[in-house]
Amino acid sequence: MISRVKICGITRLQDAQEAIAAGASALGFVFYAPSPRYIDPESAACIIAALPPFITTTALFVDEDPELVASIVAQTQVDLLQFHGAEDQNYCCQFGVPFIKALRVQEGMDIAAAVANYPSARAVLLDTYVKGVPGGTGAAFNWQLIPEQMRSQIILAGGLDVANVAAAIQVVRPFAVDVSGGLEAQKGIKCVDKINAFMAEVNRANHA
Image 1 (tube, rainbow, N blue to C red):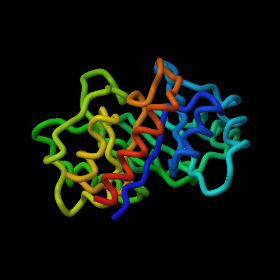
Image 2 (cartoon, one colour):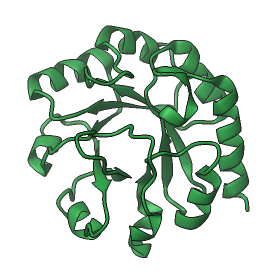
Image 3 (cartoon, one colour):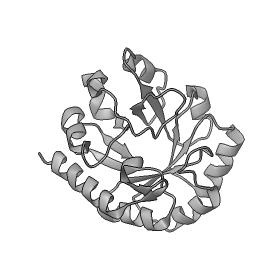
Image 4 (tube, rainbow, N blue to C red):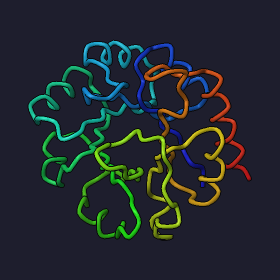
């Protein structure tokens, strides 16, 4: 199976274009104000409007007011929602847009039970648990915690970069990998050399 790539934390059209040119399947836009990768809806809408077809755009939220989520969906016309907080199934389903639920993995967690709480999710993204940080930690978790039967369906996140993404794909064989901080020149700004090197490692692992 070929693991796809989502590059998150896009704040500039240039970064979006470089990610697409390198082979990314999806782009993520962070609408969580405390994040250094936050983008305002108007800027995100401008970037999304300029993208070519067949690229999936994703809006990331953390326990956001539903009215604001609905407003941003209408303004940006994103394809997917990604929820990183304590949102339950009913919350996630109310917007009429397919969604991904992010779960933060820690030792002893029953991942299968946690996933079962979101039967309508288009996919589940597994990130690293760090107390008080909803995502973008830059830290990896123990991939062996992921149940074998689920691995081909999940999106793997958490501290992925050029140095470890090939190993992550070879060990887990996830549906997709999600990367943000690992490809940055500085917070919120991507590095084209890191993007290209990351995608080269993904392609190598996919065809190993």
